[in-house]
Length: 502
Image (cartoon, rainbow, N blue to C red; front, top):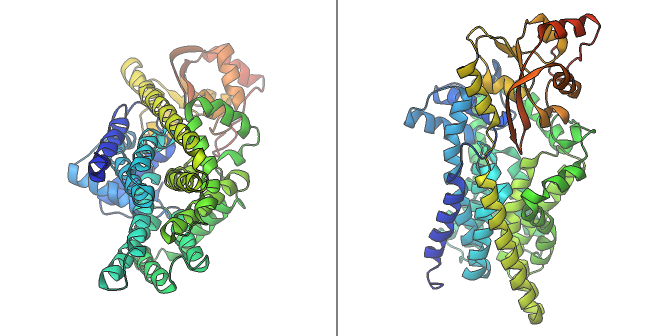
């Protein structure tokens, strides 16, 4: 069987698809970005430029939006943005499965079929990657393009000079360009390691790097031409400037570093039972990259540089930049590729370590499978269940207050529902019910202050409750209007912490 690696690629691909298909609409609670991206994809399917609340949107490039817009158009998908997001998750199940196949092909080319199968099984079941691939996130198509581009680079390095090599160089550049036009930050995972490879032991010839870079510019150049032709270049520059400042940490708007009350270390310890193997891979990216970068084989060295640069970006984002969990996606991908190469090199240097390395790889694969199965069996769709309950059980005239940005984008517009994130606004809006999700509110990611939850626990009646690992307790509270008005009259308004609401 090991003589037919393509059949093994099919095996790991089907395993990856199985993990991603199961529970695709229920294993992860709806995330605010998903709803936003689905709405933008719908705009593009209608021939419009991306916008949010009427303002042109250039914080992220349109690659994934165009792809999903085409899916909406071809399949005739309809519905509210949250429903579209749930349907479009199926696109990422396919793309994420293809990423596992590309990972297998990379590792197989670098160190052989057996390590490639182990790497494929680990990536197919990795719980963190599963969560990202199980949502409508741009990291999935961007990650697929990044790994595909590096596979083409390896094919380039194995070819003699000639027409075929030049076509492969241009192809690698175009695929890198697709990654960048899907998520700008992938330039750091593609262009930066490629340039480093030119100077590090002449791993990549300058002429090859230049042709790849030339190809990588094309997709983004087309995007800029569309923006400029619509007279929106000033807005583009303004939003991209903010995006760069956010990435380097000069402006903190999202991520763990924006909420000093949240202990990142404690949160990681708490999440270790769900993403333990993923944390190991995140930690290995720099170490494996450093080992692999010293290989005498150019194709291995270039992957080592890719791993080093990506790992350092991940570390920087945690301590100084926008510490958002999606930044770790490409770090895990490259670690799954570079670690088998580093392990093979270590075994070649110290053959007595073969049993230790083999045992560690098998243990990692087993634990990844266990955590992956656990991740897909969990039911974590609190916001969808809350919406269904409110639509089915509340009268049409019911006034419901929403308290988070996810609730705002995922549930509005709806008659009688509006963002009311304080006792003052709930009283002024004559709200009868209020919807909360405990984890984002207590960690400072909602509009409402954590104190609102404490007041509701003492003074309101829960009529719907769902507990999940992502959002904690999703609760619909029935308000006692007398107690609410009395609290506001006494000056207990519990003002919101963000969003510009009162």
